[in-house]
Image 1 (cartoon, rainbow, N blue to C red):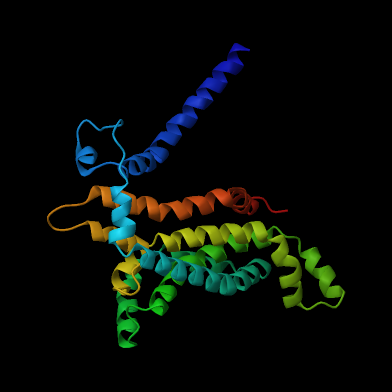
Image 2: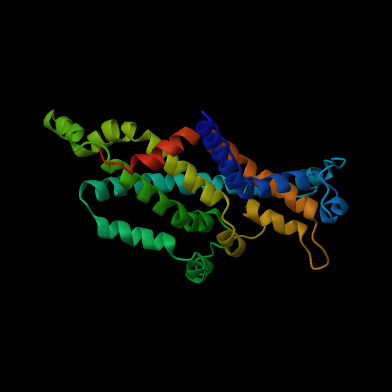
Length: 271
């Protein structure tokens, strides 16, 4: 009995030790968004303070934050949808025809530093007069979302028995019909996982937006720059903007958490 209680206590302490480095930055960011500039930079840190909503008034009232929100939504949603349309058939082909070399090539493209694509993209889009356009941002964000979709879904499709498709083909169904009507409905946990992760990576992307967007197509991560200047940094505005940026991603993850877990673990065991 004592051994069981000790194990539970040690397990709880281990969980707390793991959670502190992960949760503390978000807690600090959230609390700082309600502090004044003086309270944020005070030492020792103040955990008891008079909260203020001025930082959020700056974000939503003085800055064009709703435009940035619209731009981020349009770019992330469109890039993810295009990636799903292209990536799902590609992942199915890789899984069924064992195209491992192609899969590794896609993975290498995902692992390459994003900055290596910036100069080619900048030259191409500037020559085509597509700078500060949704087209430039969406195409660049597809580089982020598409490899994630292919990598996750190729592993998930391998877990679906081929006998299901064979039965449909014997009954006269075409392979595209079997893919759409049988494979995709069975793959919804994996699709939700790929959609959620690729959306979050696109939503939080800073580098492509910093180089390829200007006033019309600035996205949310760029909005943080509005609170920085050569003279000072408005830490309250930065923290409030950061809270507004990460909140949709956190909500999305919490809603689809069980599907994300199922989708990530399904490819680990083939069956």
